[in-house]
Length: 392
Image 1 (cartoon, rainbow, N blue to C red):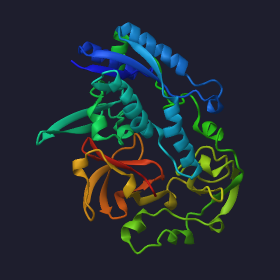
Image 2 (image 1 turned 30 degrees about the horizontal axis):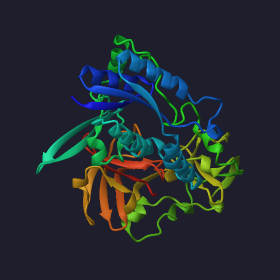
Image 3 (image 1 turned 135 degrees about the vertical axis):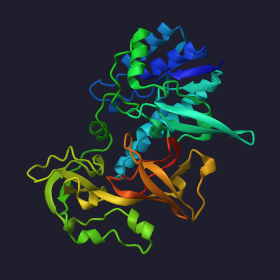
Image 4 (image 1 turned 120 degrees about the horizontal axis):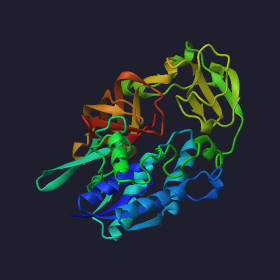
């Protein structure tokens, strides 16, 4: 049996993960991460960390395991929050949950656990881990959770072999209703607690409100781009076919007409429909592109607007990450994988092309709202092989 530190979040998933580990006979320690207490960006006293830590404590007492709170707020601000603000300011859409796992839970938090003498860190993620040996060396695999509705492997797409070797996912074989059932049977205080919908380090705070604490409002124009126009040719500024298929559409202020105003282009992301506050159009407006330099938002009517979809995307060489390092592609190589460009998106078929400048991903069918700053993750069956930050 092993010594395992469980990240108790105060939710039902990590609570049941801890229970299962105790049941299996492991020596279990519960740690709660206090990740945020900067009141300058916490709204309406809605950050629920006190309630969550109390629930985590009650679960630990019920299970008879040691418990303590660790303050990681300094690391969160430095590694996650500052990066997130910088990305939004640049007109990109980061994924703080992916970064949270790579930089905090399986780095800073993992180091604390190892200093406590732990063999592993366990979390309540809905995913699975496997391994096999090659010439005496273990190769670790990250697999989708059995509950396809809750699969969270995407959020762990930036983990390394070393990080995965120290990870345990006790509920990965279970369906969510089974987890609730176990929690009720064990009379855990979190059994019927709602799943957290907030940012991984903030809690019950709406993202636009949070961003406004650091990125100040700035009035700008909302431009509507017609479905047909000369702008359609503006993405074709390369003779390289992969580049042509991957490039985003580029707009000029003169390509469309003003239909409203916004409070800051950096608050919006490609594909966004809500929050534009523009009415009177036959079809709903969707964000097609943002220009943070000139503070403009380009929109188009209907989810089938041509500029909302494209066939490919590009990832810079420095932003490519292979969880399965042994599967790393060589320059000039191409390979078919299943792709996901956002959490809970169904896997879609695509071909990867490794070029000197980076990785081109060309989908079998056009994809909507491909957003720079988000992560693309590629799978072989139910195994996550690698990922990267979308450049365009």
